[in-house]
Image 1 (cartoon, rainbow, N blue to C red):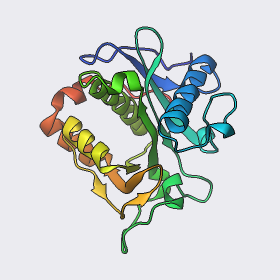
Image 2: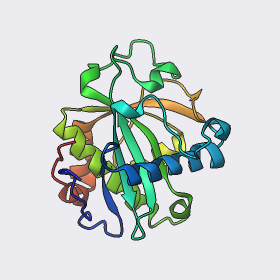
Image 3: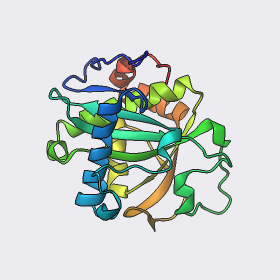
Image 4: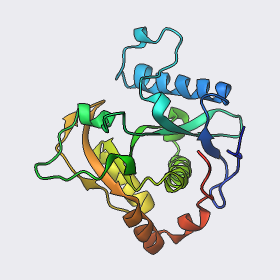
Length: 218
């Protein structure tokens, strides 16, 4: 599995969290697409299940995304997220659905990625002590990969309830850059500067910085 060594995160045990290579980790990637289908089609109804007869949800952004999965002791995917890189003209998926505030200046696209399809399996969403662990593990892997690839900013279209959870969990602020719109539910666009994130985590949750894995070759 190339250099993406499976490891348990120090202090955040119970799950194996790593980057997924779609071309080499075929079985794991299928589990990821099945979880995406389960949540986006069957549970939330954001997408029509009829359009995915094999029970696997995927889209045109997958080929130019970094994928991350958190697996439990049975090998089931407990959580997933992807970082979508800009398309050839420098745009991101959220920009097709969300407006930004007048005067908002976007950072250079090559320094950015969009947090997308962030999800936790239903069996773990009901466990308040496990879901934050899964999210923290995914965050650490995204951070490591972003550092490796020179990504400084994350976009995210999120519901306010998720923003509150992440702010409470990580001790950081997310800057809203546009109004609420209907994009897989009522969400608003946010911009996250990873340098600010690192400073705030160092101040409020230094144990997370100590648990950050070494940057991988993604």
